[in-house]
Length: 74
Image 1: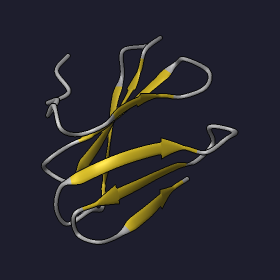
Image 2 (image 1 turned 90 degrees about the vertical axis):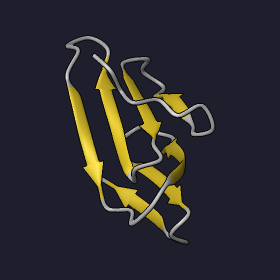
Image 3 (image 1 turned 180 degrees about the horizontal axis):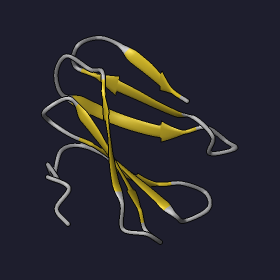
Image 4 (image 1 turned 135 degrees about the vertical axis):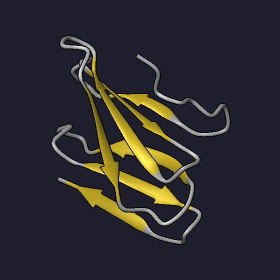
């Protein structure tokens, strides 16, 4: 499955090693469950997403975009 990776955007793995999060140029965050292969999309930024960070307990995801916002995904 293709995530639409843009080299300048960030890809991270959660602490469990099960979920990969990818920031993309189209404003969508892709979450890939490595066990099931399912891809989930998080939509909310108005433009490019530059960074994604999982919280310490991996229950939340934070993202920052060129729209000047930081988003919390629970």
